[in-house]
Image (cartoon, rainbow, N blue to C red):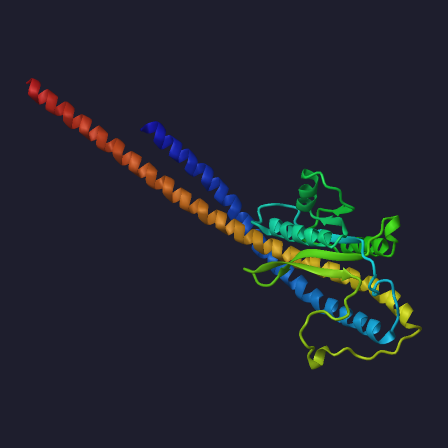
Length: 299
């Protein structure tokens, strides 16, 4: 009985130590997700405005720019997968990877060769474990994305998109990431980054969303050459910020759940210790009473 009590107490100490760690991680994630939300709010208007500007130029200029022109025969498609560098975030990375697998399957059914570009160690580990090939990887800053990384990824994607497929280029670029909706809702999403989709969504635009008319100086082609790389970088950076906020929100929920489970385990083992201790005391009392009765009978 004493050995059982010692085992329960050891388990309580172990679970208590785990609870301290999960509680600390929950608080850190809660503090960081506020800053991540603010970064998303600050970057989203710029990304939307830049998208509208590029769409307006592409719509009213009638310029056949490589980044806005639909290719007639699409054979190779790039898929950018944005996951986390660390675990302990519930189903965050697995849900993105499942969405990317659905996209890859759909593209292959259309007869397209898929070229993956991976952001985050979880995506890299997923592909390496399955011994799959991929074009490039970027890791180490999933919780706090840097614009330099988005620019590096964007430059690589634009370079590959403007390269002929027979020389290793791609015909279109898709991005799989997690959109931050609320603290309790984060949704895996797929967008087509290139070629630029001038009309995004199926709903009729509001009056404020009507594309403005522009005068182009020196030319529409030069304007598109300047705007489109900025568009690609801004959209990518916004996707990375959305993913970072989603990762931190998912980690906060996962750590809170782990902390709650630890508290339940501590209560359970404390109750078992008390029960075992009560049983031990009852047994000792029974032995004392039995010994006293035996002594009385012998006299």
